Image (cartoon, rainbow, N blue to C red; front, side, top):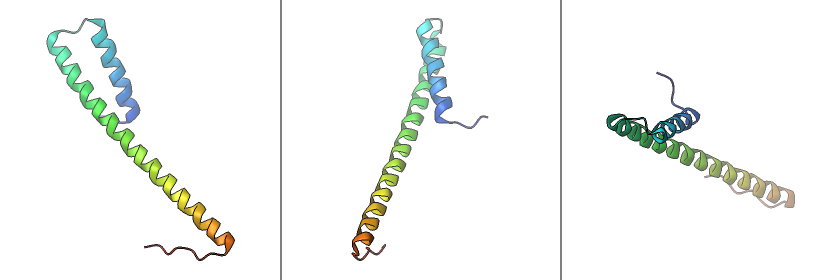
Length: 82
């Protein structure tokens, strides 16, 4: 089994949408495709949320570093890490 990635999941969702839009899928296949698509969309949403949180943490770390650098330049005591 191939490792699931965001990019592969998005590509598969696009394939599913094309198949559903074609009108060629039968009832059972449509149901299966919709279930698979829902699972992939949920996976993608979770991946985007995780990346967003990671970016937020990076921005916070950058802000703290800038503030500490600014304090050091002014000769102010640095905040101790807890």
